[in-house]
Length: 151
Image (cartoon, rainbow, N blue to C red; front, side, top):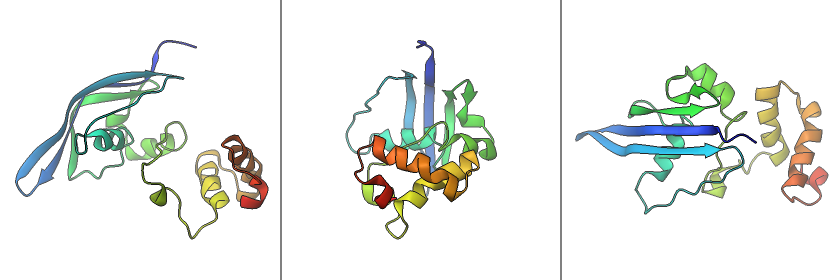
């Protein structure tokens, strides 16, 4: 395993346009993450943890959000400046995010197997039938009992 960073955040500053003007909500965040490492981001409510994570994933609407400065280097590409089409190919395939609120992570009106298979369809071109085996394998890896039935 290499010690080269998989993800490198360098001087990230993010602002939002508000009725009172531009407000900087993240200011100069810098960290690196090597493959296989775990990073915990800790801070009080409202300090910018979620905004930082959503900015890395490019999930915040622009406007009103704006990356004012910094780089988000992932596998040699600066996510901060990638075209949306390229970012969509990376997001969910090479980099992902587990949201804090479990009730918003999965749609309760759809079967879990279809929701997981959607990622394989979007990023690997698999149909639902071909995605079934890898989805069952994934469910088993995370400890979901009777994965075939729960699919």
